[in-house]
Length: 286
Ligand SMILES: NC(=O)c1ccc[n+]([C@@H]2O[C@H](COP(=O)([O-])OP(=O)(O)OC[C@H]3O[C@@H](n4cnc5c(N)ncnc54)[C@H](OP(=O)(O)O)[C@@H]3O)[C@@H](O)[C@H]2O)c1
Image (cartoon, rainbow, N blue to C red):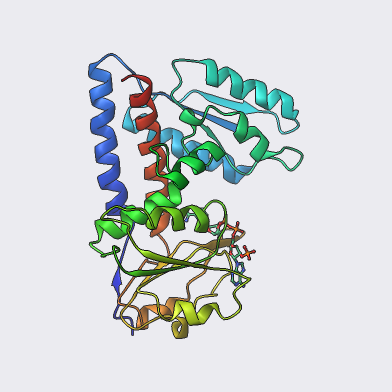
């Protein structure tokens, strides 16, 4: 029987988006209409669906969201040209390139042509560098969402042992940098484990906060969880429409608090995208 407190993402996202709405309204009072441009390459149904959801939410929050739907066989140079046009457009404050893009294209190369100040995903190498040295800038959305989730639910992080399973560029690696920063909602003793650490369960078992950022369904089992600790499941794999989380559901029988199987980290990631977008519009209009 589950005894763990659930840590849903929806109330966290709602609080972040309320703040975004208020900031959008302030910009509009000054005659500025924040604009988040979206780029979709090709006709992948899932990606098209994600873009539609983000555009709908952008409109609800008061953003303009000009959309570029590019052909699936577009050349890399033409994709770069579209990004360059959006970089030069002073009316566009943020740009989202929906991931993944077709296999013949190089996503990282495209991302590097984007103006770092318009990078709402916070994934441009310059923004990763800003995070590494503690300069302000757009933060990677999922790591920022996890910090916000812990803070919103009153989970103390400062001074505690956080173990992150996974060192991927979108999640584990930037999350480790974020949670080790000197700030009341971070300030943790962070350990990162991965395939190079065969006895990673030994580290997981001593974590006050264990964060799964892998993408291997069920890799985190109850025997890896310290009784009463906090477990955050961020890694997932999709098989068709089925979502397979890293964290086995029965971990809730050992943990003190845990993200739900669905609706944990995901909603906070999307909220952070809009937080980055409104911040980009504010930066462009000091
Ligand atoms: N919820 C959200 O909004 C959200 C957003 C972004 C990503 N995600 C999910 O988060 C997960 C990670 O994303 P990512 O982009 O960082 O992925 P990634 O680049 O593939 O990184 C996966 C990491 O997991 C480690 N790993 C894989 N198998 C392992 C094993 N058996 N034992 C120990 N470590 C293992 C890898 O170790 P090595 O480095 O040694 O190979 C790697 O560091 C994915 O499932 C992704 O779907 C979720």
